Image (cartoon, rainbow, N blue to C red; front, side, top):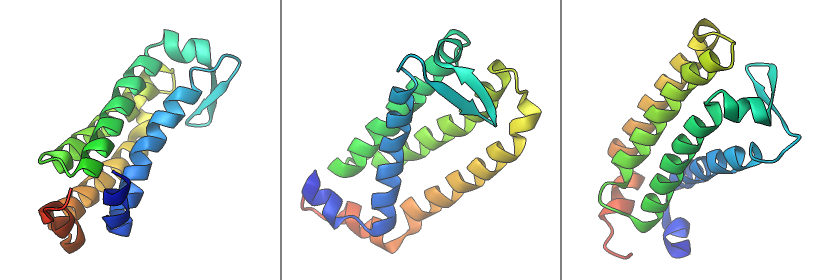
Length: 140
């Protein structure tokens, strides 16, 4: 996997690292006495998990991590898995805003920008010359 990471185009490396960063962020939310900042509001770890945001984000983080490993393995459906994980993250924004009491309206601009980012990532993964070559390459 390290060899594949080194062969990835730079932007694909960044995408892979971003996926793993989501998992690290969720792991940090498991430490007691930690405050989580959601849209500028502080939420305790206990509240985060009790309201359902923690479990929901854990599922999103697992999807992101699995897709990152699939990218590293050059799996056949890695790109699709990565796009699905980003869609799950996009859905998570209004959900987390809703259950944390911030309200879905406050998260609309974040959801819109994340939707556009998901579209850009999708286009890059499927149309980018470097990514197509990376997945076409037979060396695993």
